Length: 269
Image (tube, rainbow, N blue to C red; front, side):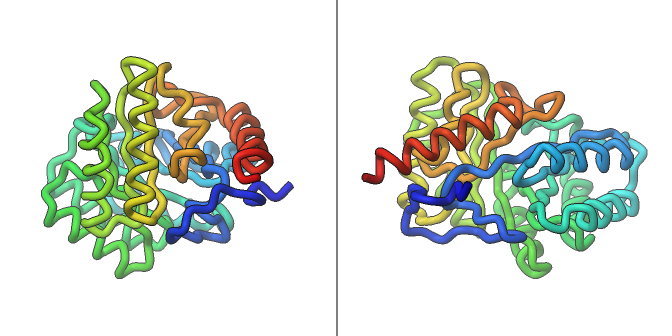
């Protein structure tokens, strides 16, 4: 089945990575690889691809603390080799943004550059809470090496005001992000709907794909209905989730595909 058929296709740029069209049609599923050593990371990658994940995210911060830059580069290259048709995002999530441990600014920069220069990933995650010049430097480095830049911001406490969320996504784009990502915690159903409104407004204003996620039990709808509000990726679970409220990959794919068919059959008529 062609799941781009009849897609809600906003007039904006999309990303094409290894043949995947990100930003048109149904949201593409992403599974995070959270192994603490190389063997576990590779095994998780193969399992996620076997279950038809559209994209993978390697969470470098889950590696054992003794792993150095040379090992990070080696794992990144091998992941690139074993994912010839699956887009790969490389992420160093710091403690303040929901990661496994704190990184000093210098260490964070060094590891990001290691990933960018490794030749493995297709996209690198860059955290918005770093100084603007650091974000721009990493975005420019990613582009210089042929990678896309995903600039992200996470709030695990609450959902900001709707206008604030729109401004955050637009600010990421102004720093050169190819894919702005916002994930916030929903404390009510209304929070989820406000996040989806912010996603729709930002994607229309920017005319580019965005990723907008409402975390927690109240935010599940945002993970499944991204096509209706301009959110291009949805993070799913194979085994342990990497963030609160993630839906199991198979269930998410089934629901998203059904929702896409409904949108194509009714909304676009």
